[in-house]
Length: 111
Image 1 (cartoon, rainbow, N blue to C red):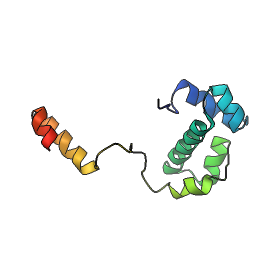
Image 2 (spheres, rainbow, N blue to C red):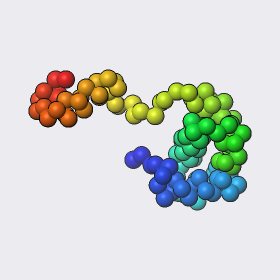
Image 3 (cartoon, rainbow, N blue to C red):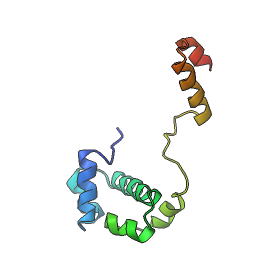
Image 4 (cartoon, rainbow, N blue to C red):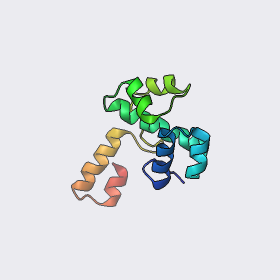
């Protein structure tokens, strides 16, 4: 199961971290695993940075700093949010173009 940071647990977790409760207490409060909390913090960090906030503004808004920030910062310019099972972006685009033209599912499978 994939938990989303926009879920009720995600909102509760991020708010708890922002209010200074720390990672472990915030994950317990939200009922999630520590690694899920780290993933949500990373996603939120990248979202804020990609929307133009500076690193210091972002950590202040999150209310959280970690030794992982250097790795997160390295990912700011890269889009890695596509699921690992997705096909190449060009193949996906040609699939949806064929779909929009109303081609049969057999021709879409060969595309």
